[in-house]
Structures are given as C-alpha cells and as structure tokens.
Length: 234
Image (tube, rainbow, N blue to C red; front, side, top):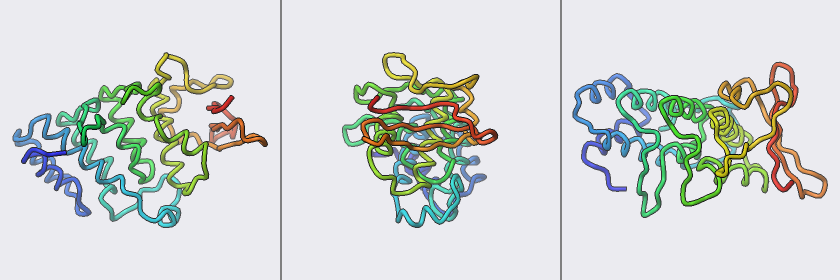
C-alpha cells in the first residue's frame, strides 16, 4: 500500500523495537495527521508484524505472554493511543487490490494476548465483530483460523492459544455467522458475552475417532467445566 508522507512518518514510529509512546502522543497531539494517515499507518504496522519466525521460539514462552524486544511487543499500547486519536477499527484498506481491514489483519500477529486485548479495545471503540470480507459466509476473523487449527496439526501451541483467545473476544462482542446464527453452542448458565473476559477460559481441540467430526471445547479455568463448544463437520 502506498502511504501518504505523514502515514509513513507514523508507521516508522510504530514499526520499531524502540517504541516511544510519549513521542507518538506528542506527534498526534500536533494535529498534523489526518484520520487517513492514522488508519494507513496502523494497518501497515499490523501487516508488518504478521511475519512468523521459528515456531520453536514462540513455544519458549508461556501461553499469553508478550514476547519482548520485537516490533509487535508494544502492539496493545500503540493501538490504545491510536484509538484515542481517531483510528477507525472498521476502515477498509486496499492492499494490492485486496480489500482488508486492521482487525482482520491483527489476527495474524502472534504475540501473546495482546491481539485479543487490542481487539477488545477496537470493538469497544465501535469495531464491527461481524464484518465480512470478500463475500465469505463468516465474519472476517473466522475466515481461516478455526479451519486451520481443526483441520491440521497445530505447529505451535503458543500461536494457537493466541488465535483462539482473539476469537473468544469477537464471540463475546456478538460475532455470528453471516446468516445470524450463533457460532458456538453454550452450556449451563454461560453467556457468550462472558468471553470478553477471555483470560478466565481455556480450550481444547478434540477429534472423533473417525476424524469426521472435530470440535473446540471451551472451559472455565476456575471450575474446569466446559462452557461452550464449536463443532466442525457435524
């Protein structure tokens, strides 16, 4: 994507290992940056943070832990600041003739629970949990990852955990299938909106003996009871 001169300046302040939050806020307070500048810079920053290094490096870290010393280490802090200065979570971006969006692209940033927490911030700032991209029959954030983790071997538990917690937040804010159906089945008194507090839950991937039915079960940490399930191939 061709950035404006101001968007390029913001991008360089975001995509760095030496992030300076105070400097970013000072620049934004100057009023020199338009909403388009901010949206472009934020989207480009997230896109540049989606490269995946060695899977073994990820799994040296505890689930949900922020990996320090890389360009995505300050993702949550950066998104919080940008939202205060006009970042639009629903802005569409033309990336090499493919229409995309920052909330969808952020799904591919694998650095602990920052992405889930950043998604929560963006959804609280008016982000649409049911945005559909490219005419798919599911919300944008669901286009790839559940199918990937259910249909194949999970190469990194750390990455899978990051993605599923991101999905929990979207479910908590009301993400549904395009026809309005609920994505998951719930049990007992559990409400899908409880997933907004995603750290209270964990998950497990289960396959039937014939592998014709696959599902993700969600459990409450405090009680270890199953509270919800997503089934594929039922």
